[in-house]
Length: 400
Image 1 (cartoon, helix red, strand yellow):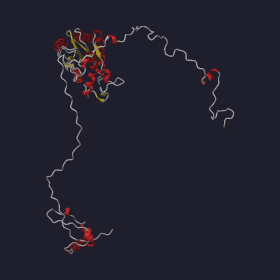
Image 2 (image 1 turned 45 degrees about the horizontal axis):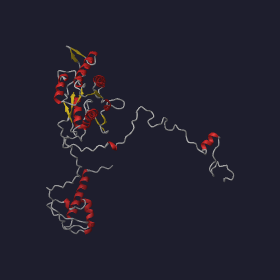
Image 3 (image 1 turned 45 degrees about the vertical axis):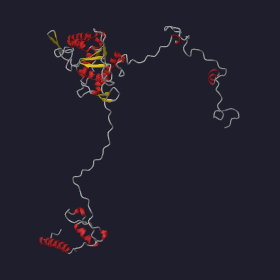
Image 4 (image 1 turned 120 degrees about the horizontal axis):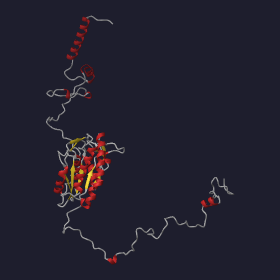
């Protein structure tokens, strides 16, 4: 490669500058024709348009097809920089129907008293939602989240429950305890560890005493069992406590409400998401594996609702109203004795109620005059003739 001297580069630079100056000074005052502008476009860029000029300079628009003619500036609409672009209207969302207001309870509404720990509070809130449209049923939630049968220094249910029953005058009492009872128990000046023989014996006695407070007053008692939990140890302890609740309710005449299957899968494992009361897959439990979501509370109360409706009867219906002498429905006239069809009494232990002793089909089949193909085959070993034209039709004169 040949290296040129420094003054050679300077001479070339001067020549280029002189050429550019000469071309610039030689430009005509009027616009050059389209053929002459091609070289200028190559050197200095394409033609300028009105948007390339400052706002304070006159703007001209050049077009090659006009052969250099000067076009008058196009009128421009004044810009309003303060104008705001109109927002595109969004489609209106479907109106959500308002939630119906809870109906007013009747003065003689039958009350459901709910007592227990924080799980009982979930049952109480779920039952309130369930019966909010039933004027004949009122739910009274008197649960205490930190209470239990072990720690009576916080709340002694044995002493508090009789007063609550006298105050509320419930038709049904719902009890749910045990979630806070997995701890050491103080009894007789000593302390016993959880699940020891002495602990279980004393805990059973406390269950009997609390349940007896309700059953001795001839009130229906619904003792709700513990649900499954995410912790394996807590889940095993819940199984032990549920066995005590179930056995004691059978002895004392109460009813044990088993909710276990609603919160486990087919293999008996704890689930966070499962079917709600409508069969939809929703989240039922909190992230701690203990608490319940709103759907979980409603499902927990669903198991108790069945027992409550069975005891309440028609008064739990949402259509129940306060009937008095002025709002009683019209009674239809009973038929006269002459219109009544007299029938002979029938003994329920009589096996011949319809006059027959044999089951349907015991009578022999009716005799037939002609033999069927089956009879010919079974009795004499004869097969019926093949249909005409079939390959096994060997009758004389059959076509092949």
